Length: 180
Image (cartoon, rainbow, N blue to C red; front, side):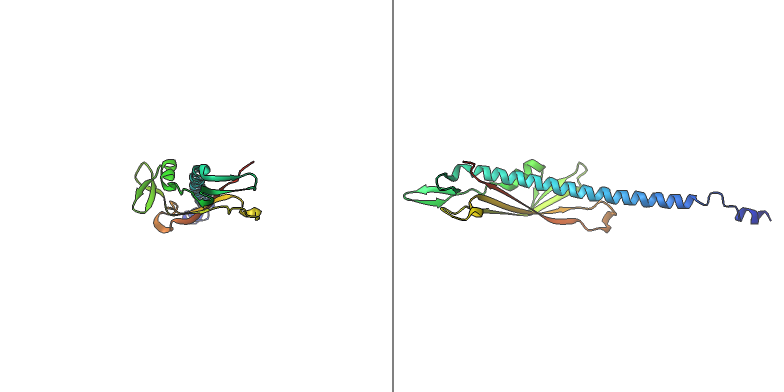
């Protein structure tokens, strides 16, 4: 009789459900936090790449021919009676290493945490400089432009080794157009 009374008692039956709901909410919050961490790292790398590319564009400022009368500009240098293309690719990797605090290991540039774990890796930098043509009537092509892209790998810390790292291509563009 007393065993039957104990088994039919409903006190505390909501406790397992409360624990399950709490664990689900913690997992959802952790997943959302990891997503935001990945996006913040990607945004930081994109901003650093943009800063390095803008520095490259600025380094080319001295070689940009100011076609005020003609209304165009491009990386040209006067040679005798003609103009020759002249631009500098700069050292974007060196600038990225300085901005992000990266160490080069082979062909990869790696950011590590204080514990020696990899925070992220970048590699495969592509820089494409598009020079504005001389005396072009095309308004869209009237500026000196630098397009760049780099591969980014960020290890995912949610779920341990179960999830693969996030690998994305980060792209950006910068240009120079004379104001006057």
